[in-house]
Amino acid sequence: LPPLAEILNNESQSRTFKQADLRHWLSNSLWGNQADLSLWLADEADQPANQDIDRDAQLMADDSSDLAPIFASLPISRIDIILDNAGIELTGDLLLADYLFQSGAAESIVLHAKAHPTFV
Image (cartoon, rainbow, N blue to C red; front, side, top):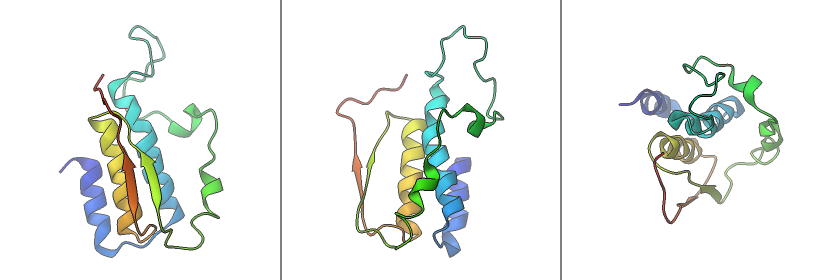
């Protein structure tokens, strides 16, 4: 299994919803966009060379703490996720959806796919 899926699979054995886990899976969903490096120009000097960058330092704003009141009363009847393109970008979104469903945070997850997803 890919590393993220393996982690999720191992955690699903005794899964309960935790805000810290939500933040982790949200971050992976967001940063899946970095996998194809489309966030930077090909010759840009500060393009990351590896995954060891400080993700939080790269964010312009982080409103993930505002989700705490939304997830205070579980389960949420429905959560909609707009999916990203394809490949690892899509994988991060699907892993987030799996976590929300398997942890009992959501009764249903509705995935909205792009009409023409592309892998860059």
